[in-house]
Image: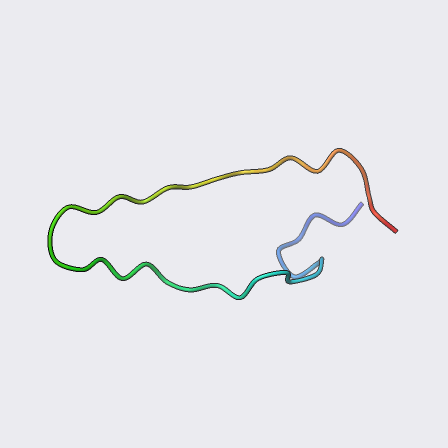
Amino acid sequence: VTTGATFGQEVVCYESPRPSMGIHRFVFVLFQQLGRQT
């Protein structure tokens, strides 16, 4: 079983959060992969 960060397929490029002036929020969403896709 390979669980390293370098394994897998990148679906969306990472963009670092850039808060602007005023109130801002950070939301972290985690998904559990139930099985390996082929």
